[in-house]
Image (cartoon, rainbow, N blue to C red; front, side, top):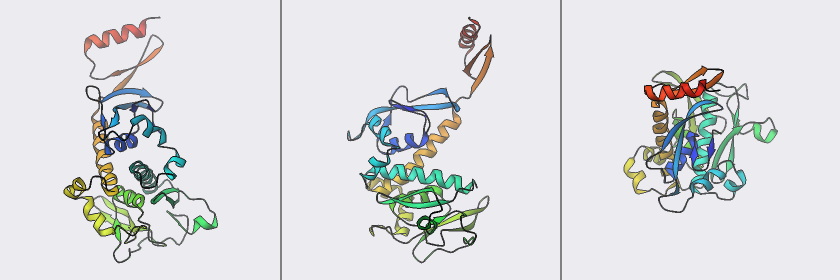
Length: 270
């Protein structure tokens, strides 16, 4: 996990989840650039509580990696958001070909993708290349949904839509060439959500707005918020690493001349 402390975080998943659950970026100073162990990054600063007053920012962040807390709060919006973020990370690694097979494990009311272990029980539920006979061009099932969109797949898994057993994925043609397609079952495990209805509502802003407390609204908005934050990070001013007088410092590349003079004077000072 990226730097998270107090009311600040550089973790895009946590930042997107906080915005989705109703915690606003702090007015006046919503972000700043800093240099951490992984290099320059954008640090987002949030308000102390969500708009509704139910959720405290720091409390939510502390529970992000707390599996026990999540397990005891099935159906909590934060649990759905954490599962969707974890699923997306796992799918990105899988699609990019890191070779790590995955298993869909029950978590709360949905599924969480985790690295597979070759135990007999898990070997029957995994996908991603662990078996030599895994289908490469499988078709879905009637009423199910097949998608190349990782946000949709990650969110539907978090909502409790299982993958088609034995035909979890195939290959389809995307705008930039062949892409992996995930096949999801027609109905969520709880029986209250239909796959095609979820897929249609995913892009229906009016439906999402009018059902703001529905789990689908949370996981659908999550992907949008993450994309917007990523765009912001990509447009952030880059930082240059400067070595002078035996010291190393980082300076925004658009820093004005007077700030640069002060910066270099500090570096030269013994």
